[in-house]
Length: 112
Length: 115
Image (cartoon, rainbow over all chains, first blue to last red; front, side, top):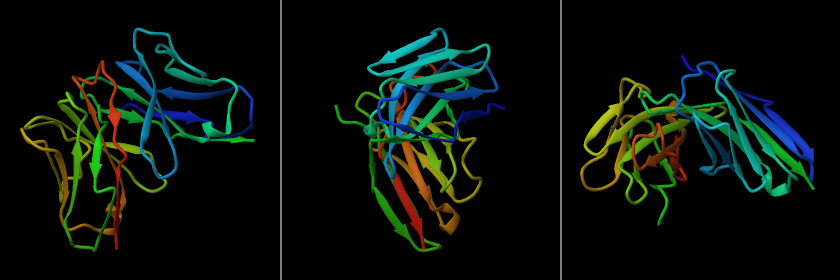
């Protein structure tokens, strides 16, 4: 059974810092992995999608890497801003049933 | 291109009533997924549907919950005889094809409160 864990559960950093969020999964047989952002009381915004054959994806200040064999993904945020404050979720797609298995999330607070 | 739409955004029901949650996928998307986010818990998969077919309902509670995605119109998640434990945010996502290779795009969610 696929399990997805995110570390740390919460993170507070001063504005301008670079930071790394971690995601680990127990079953390496995945089709892809998505990183999402969720603001309080809001829906999910897709940030990056990494296919199983890819090693990383970049979008602006965000960079996500994937190491399938070790069951790990990281989301790197450069030059953090207060507007980056949100909960960040990773989700893996095992493919067979097309459902996303979500991690527990990392609550990020960027202090001005 | 409008995103995934869900309505209502907020729904209040008394115990024992029925709740109907609607989801209109993005234009051109024929795959719909429902997820539930209970208070202080993560998002959990409920059901995956294509037009007129339920593909995977392994995450659906055995009783009181049902889902459909008719040939015409939105997908509906129906909860009969709601209980307080059904209070949660229900999210719908859509994708153009088999999600193994395509992103799932999420709607804003319906927040159900059972009083």
